[in-house]
Amino acid sequence: MAYTGQSLKRFEDPRLLTGQGAFLDDLTFPDMLYAAVLRSPHAHASIRAIDTAAARHAPGVIAVITAEDLAGVVEPLPTRQETEAQELRPPVHPLLARGTVCCTGQPVAVVVAQERSLVRDALACIRVDYAPLPAVIDPLDALQAAAVHPELGTNIALRLRTAGGDLDAAFAQAAHVVWQRYRVQRLAPAPLETCGVVAHAGGPGRHCQCRDGHFSPRRRAPYRHPPHPRKDLAAL
Image 1 (cartoon, rainbow, N blue to C red):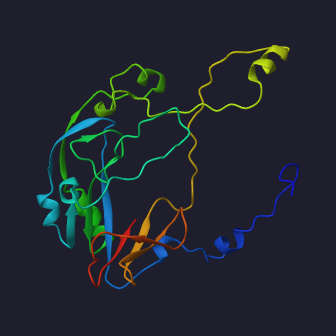
Image 2: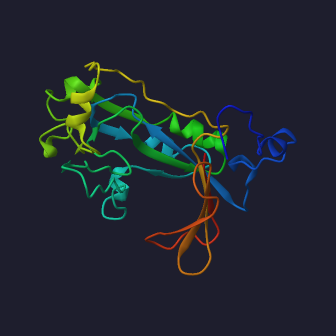
Image 3: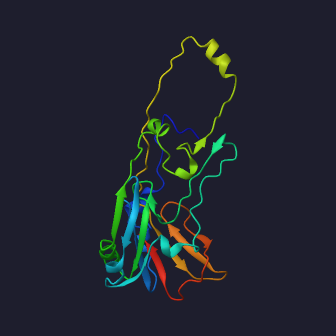
């Protein structure tokens, strides 16, 4: 089928225009809990202290979770595994920042409460004492700057060279050769639904059924400890 030079009939419009779209906010379960994530406002900073006392005593709060609570319980987030790379140094990505934040928006704490409004109110009660550190925001500057992750010794996490055909011959035969450095913006799609997940803990085999807005509608993922017998969790 040719995709250029003609209009293409859209297939998703009728469902959305008639109010039949299914989003995370449409999913509810008995005894559902809500979770919200506190994220770093700094691109690079040390975490000197996290005060969660007020949040833990806020109305409707079930739990306040920081990196200290996850130590030895939850593994770091998986990173890219590139077998053909010339260099690969993926930094460790903890589920919640421990000691240092290395990017704006890095998760620092999670609050779980009985209602969405309550979880947001409790999130605002958390106080984090940050000590800002120098940030590197330009990729070219990062080549010479001190490593953001000191254990890696460099800011180059991945080096991958790909080639095809006779490149030298192509340049030799070209009528004109232009050398130029291009700066291309990062692209980000704008979905109707932003990031979120609804997780239903239950079923055989100690699995968790999940529904999120950007991946497969139904997935079953193992978790390490049995869930609360009557609680479901929505992180929106």
